[in-house]
Image (cartoon, rainbow, N blue to C red):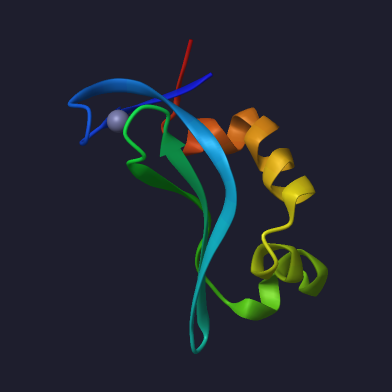
Length: 92
Ligand SMILES: [Zn+2]
């Protein structure tokens, strides 16, 4: 269970995987996030996967998965404790 403080709720809440990615490509720099949502208020939080990364450093196949909101890929990140920890998730 992943917890964050949600602005909408004003306290720590459980956040769930939306299985949606957000890709922001800006010339030679790409940001990719996995979107989590507060279970109660739908407030969202973007968990950073890639930050200001050169597109050439992201495997093409993986990039396609992000673009297509690939469910399997989203689930993999959702199970990746290191990834969640890096995004300051609290566990309970
Ligand atoms: Zn909330």
